[in-house]
Amino acid sequence: MSWIFLLLAGAMEIFGVIMMKTYAITAKKIYLLGVAFFFVLSLGSLSLALQEIPMGMGYAIWTGIGTAGGVLVGIFFYKESRNFWKLFFIALIIVCSAGLKLVS
Image 1 (cartoon, rainbow, N blue to C red):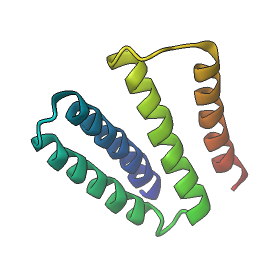
Image 2 (cartoon, helix red, strand yellow; image 1 turned 180 degrees about the vertical axis):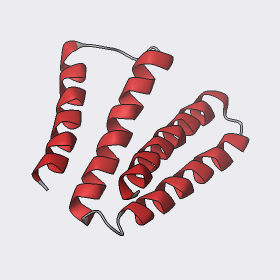
Image 3 (cartoon, one colour; image 1 turned 90 degrees about the horizontal axis):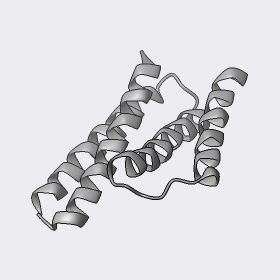
Image 4 (spheres, rainbow, N blue to C red; image 1 turned 90 degrees about the vertical axis):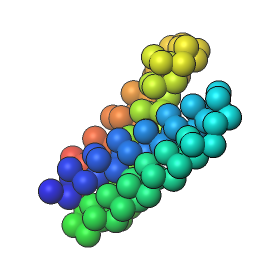
């Protein structure tokens, strides 16, 4: 169950970043509530996950999900640049996060 909480925490982190981007585009203050809502859910889910998952590994995977997810959302939904090196390093983050799980 703790891994589900960790994946949920990462997903909520991505939604929080989407809310931040939407606020930056529209400047509507209602999106700040979305930012707070999703980040609170993210941190709450992370704290539940860390009850069973080692802190270093859980935090690294959570930040990896948020980072990779944020970049991919930017590429696919906000037409941000997509180049070989950006995709290479995102893949590296994902591989390293999976590697942490495999060695623990």
